[in-house]
Image (cartoon, rainbow, N blue to C red; front, side):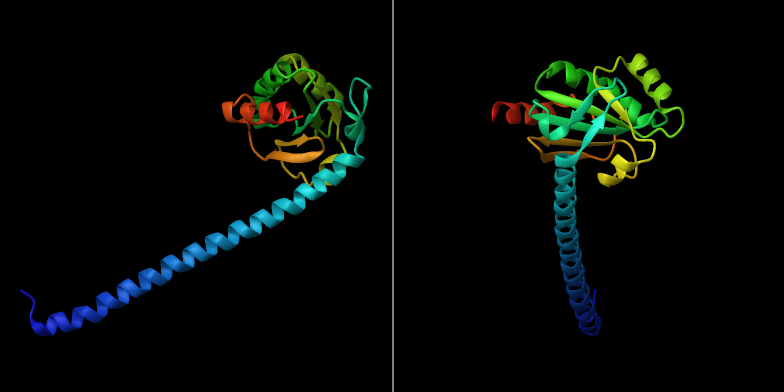
Length: 190
């Protein structure tokens, strides 16, 4: 049994613990909110850069096709930044091929390859191995990657009529039901 003296000593300690816990919880929530707000602002700034670069980008693929993004007829364009040495990049290739098959004429996938040595040969190997149904361009000097603020692979930027609708900075399953549903709703909204 607790004596009166012990109870008097415990009450201030309990009050301190409760107050400190409340303060700590409030601080954690505040920091989380601020980080999320900062991230949203940073994403908006990056999306603005992506959309500006989209309007200006004109590239030539390894098949000698010249593509000016703002003139592409497909409403959805996916820029997929990849390299032959990037295992996550290669793991997402089959789902990217399936996506292109599923939405032929509605989605245009363009690979931006970051291999620095023997880029054309490396692209050709990957095209054959994964039966790529989209064209790629070389980015040996990282000019395109730098314009789109890409500093690691894989990165995929999805545009609908020139506006950013999705950015993936890690391996992505392009056949994910939620992702497919989003694309279908964008395509039907035309």
